[in-house]
Length: 369
Ligand SMILES: C=CC1=C(C)c2cc3[nH]c(cc4nc(cc5[nH]c(cc1n2)c(C)c5CCC(=O)O)C(CCC(=O)O)=C4C)c(C)c3C=C
Ligand SMILES: [Fe+2]
Ligand SMILES: [Fe+2]
Image (cartoon, rainbow, N blue to C red; front, side, top):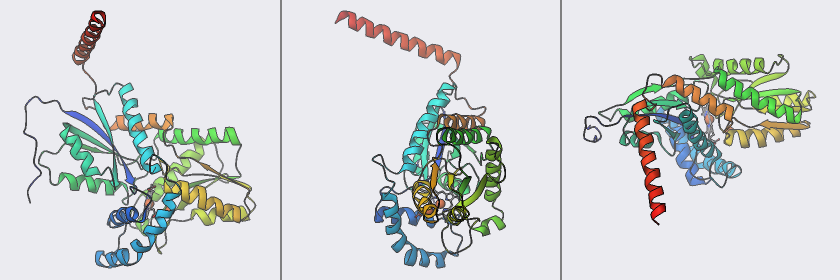
């Protein structure tokens, strides 16, 4: 095995720092072919499906991909926007706003990029581009507030796999979780309060998190615990009593038992028990996506109404919410401590002089014209 070709080493070259916001990934188009490619990469990850490889290959290629690709493409088509998949559109906007927020905090010499664990822009492509731009310090910021081996650690795997073939590896920092970060909890609480100010309060607030197989909890994955902690902190910020809210898990995949209680049956039971209105928020998703816009805001809404419920409110994800962008900037800042991301006074003076000279030259040109 040989290592990837390095740019020639040059003394005195400027080294930059970067933050990479990494989300799960999404298909390139709401079509069967694009879904097949996306699901094949996603579901072949041994962090995501822990079944012996040979057996899983047969199930994946024989039963899952041929059927699920078409079904999922149809679901994606129902949420697709002119700009593309909501997950990607929001993650791109968050990265741009995060760059601006960090620059406002003085980190003008910091690059913020966005990458996807599955699909595009791929993590290896983004890391290679940052290297070409001279980034020697990289902080990986997963878009998941709660750590799970199935998601966060899978991003770490992809980062390590990429650098395995690189000779000159940058300094790396990995964000693990921020499920109890004050800024994150505060942004969630603000968005619920804003919704309630406009629409009044529900009989029950449902906090729905993406599920994982129950087995992963029993084998030591802290995800379940971190979801419950987020829910407790959010409930406490909203001053909710134990009867005012319920924590549920959605998006079950396959036949095994996943974390319980499941979202859809819980919401149906609430309607049957006489709840007139439920509000659902998905605090584990930082961007709206298929699992929130289709599964919750369409499917679960229909289940609630079919069971006799009157009013179903879906409270959107944090997306580009300014309080959330400020929280992201704080989280990033806590992980780039000590890195030279700000201009020194001498550099600032140099830039100021260059800008003044450019302005004077433009004025001179204008006067001569
Ligand atoms: C928020 C954290 C997530 C965890 C934990 C997670 C675990 C997990 N997911 C699957 C299977 C699927 N998930 C799918 C979509 C999807 N999952 C997350 C997030 C988490 N998944 C998001 C944000 C999305 C939406 C992506 C988008 O493009 O909008 C899908 C694909 C959609 C479909 O075909 O239904 C699958 C499949 C497993 C097996 C798992 C843990 C073991
Ligand atoms: Fe998922
Ligand atoms: Fe789903």
